Image 1: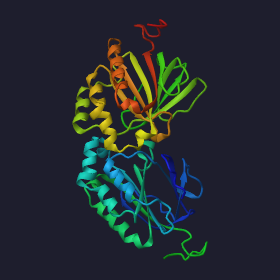
Image 2 (image 1 turned 135 degrees about the vertical axis):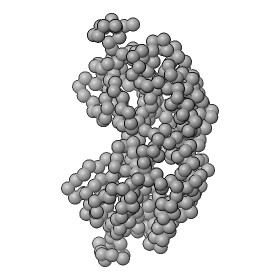
Image 3 (image 1 turned 180 degrees about the vertical axis):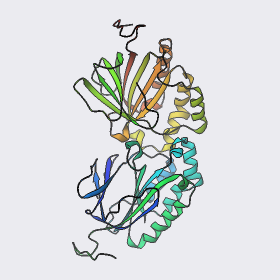
Image 4 (image 1 turned 45 degrees about the vertical axis):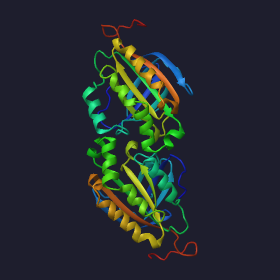
Length: 199
Length: 199
């Protein structure tokens, strides 16, 4: 996928072409996204083209909630993206309510970590479930956040557990739109170009 | 100026046309901006045109550091933009260092408020010196922040005191580029269209 190393714009292009095949696409809440069969990530701003159904924009940015200790802890635990064994990925675009964005910084932090344990929950599944967050709200993008996950076939259960636990938290009561795409890297056979259709 | 009420993109266009006449333009640190004689603000993304020397982009966004009490305090104290008596304004574009952006949230908050008293300092000059912050970094804009100030002629000293005090703080040691434009609303005479050239 060639993820950029520093703060930079990315575009997730949903359509019928791309290195990631969509295995599952579900609307958790709010308006759905048009169903697609494949996904790719492009660096920079990317506009809708013939083969694409949608383009979701985001930007890597500075941390908004992590304390120094939490940041050090995550850095120590986390694995990079693009591990050869991580043949599965997920893209979860989320938008939070207007009321969330009107909260003060300490109120959002308290809901997110002190009461919902978002950072602690994510850490529990590191390094197995790698995550990267992109911000869309200030760009005027379709979603406030795009979270990208990568994991091996053996960690699919862990991924499900993680997102299931997050959706039970108080923080998630502020989410008003959420879509989940589970993706498998193409080609997934041992030989290049092999396509067995489904696992 | 017609400032937008909610989170939205704005563009400050520097050139030789606009309702704000540039009375003073100084580079505090880092690379200068081309000298201009007038400024205007446009809603939305605005591209460079013949009459313009530069366009600075920003977006109104959620609070990044304010606690609930601080936010309530500021809301209680502050005056809106566009007060008839506020014939003076200032635009201060700022970029902070890469090292600043790599700090964790609690480290940035500690430098900014607990040690530099940025929020408390700003409050001291409310409602006389009205302020509005726009974020540029996630847009890939030329500056990380654009701060807009509005004040009456009688509060020019207060404005100078405020920015002088901020520049003495520990927080400002992370600023690597800063330009200051002081502006006067045109026309500034009592009759519409009067132009006395200088104060």
